Image 1 (cartoon, rainbow, N blue to C red):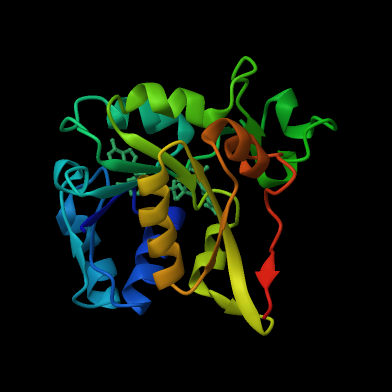
Image 2 (cartoon, rainbow, N blue to C red):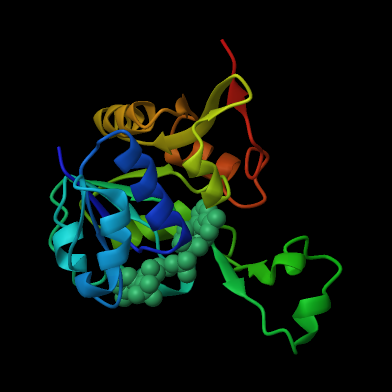
Length: 214
Ligand SMILES: NC(=O)c1ccc[n+]([C@@H]2O[C@H](COP(=O)([O-])OP(=O)(O)OC[C@H]3O[C@@H](n4cnc5c(N)ncnc54)[C@H](OP(=O)(O)O)[C@@H]3O)[C@@H](O)[C@H]2O)c1
């Protein structure tokens, strides 16, 4: 089973770090090409390789770790998915112009971080990502915590919980195995339409650090 990562920012690079710590192989990509990722892959060791977006997108399991505003453009024109697994790690947020009234919107709890939720017209984000990856088996995961949490699976005497949801049982098993093998405690939130909103931005399970202590 191969793993590809599209996006090498906070989420993509820390996902790669989590895999590397457990010796799991992956190909990571960004907008600027593999040469720009030399220092990252040198840091991570031999299990993580830099590749083009096309190469990363050809893996059996592909994490989408790009900003919401870039997702449609990035996912357009990639190799046919043919039942391969896409992990949607995105959150539907956009950056606020510090000079705009949005920067001081008292109704926006995210304004302090310089971001605001994108209006999805009542849909949840994976309903939209699903349209960008026709033929893929979509699993929502790795989106509910600050990416720094991926650097430390063992915490407070237990394993940090990572939620996942999706509509394909086998795809979820495979993503669960990646979460588990990386040292985290996987929790299945059910179907995409149920688990997606629960762990999405502003959902009740988002941005909390749950730890499985056993
Ligand atoms: N940051 C977090 O703590 C966190 C936590 C959970 C979920 N998320 C979600 O994860 C996603 C990524 O967030 P982030 O904070 O990692 O963003 P980021 O640090 O800005 O990184 C975005 C990455 O996307 C790449 N990218 C942009 N356009 C591309 C293209 N056309 N082809 C390939 N790669 C492209 C960028 O490439 P370059 O480096 O070449 O510009 C960059 O590596 C967002 O949807 C966010 O909501 C973030």
